Amino acid sequence: MLPRARVQAALAFQPIDCIPLQIHPSPGGLFEHGQKLLDLMRHCGHDFDDLSHLTVPRPPAEHFDADGRYHRIETDAWGVTWEYRLFGVWGYRIGYPLADITRLATYRPPASAPLIGVELARAQAAGVAHRRTYYHLIGGISIFETMQSLRPFEDGIVP
Image 1 (cartoon, rainbow, N blue to C red):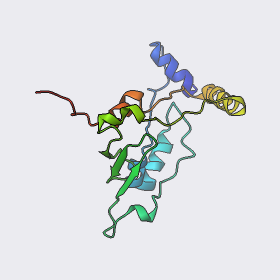
Image 2 (tube, helix red, strand yellow):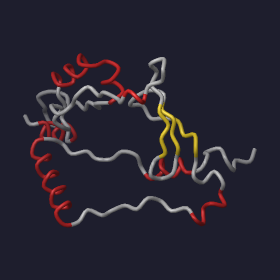
Image 3 (cartoon, rainbow, N blue to C red):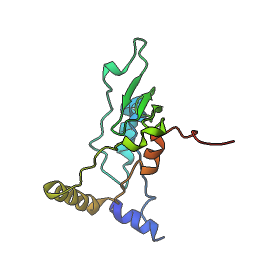
């Protein structure tokens, strides 16, 4: 049974050969546990993607302090400054582009380029090829999480 058919059958409460499995190949987990975790992921497989392309991540040496601890500060395209203390794990917001709400009138989010032409055709073909074998999931951070990062969450709460 192909992974895609397995997931579709399970969602329809039909008989399946084994329970569908989704593995999240977290960079943090792979960095922490290395090749043994990668080998286990590949051995188990999963029903949403091919894991053969995965490797154990190797963060750059400059992302570590003199004591060998991971530490990086970065400002993203939205203007949010993040501090990272664990490789592959979502960081802590330490700078908000709209901490001062008077900046709202001049704030501009990053431009998003629509997929068109050859890039759109390539993305569509990749989606069709993926769905021949696997169940297709997409997504990630929603606009809600992004908007929370622009301004401190607690700001404006009146007791």
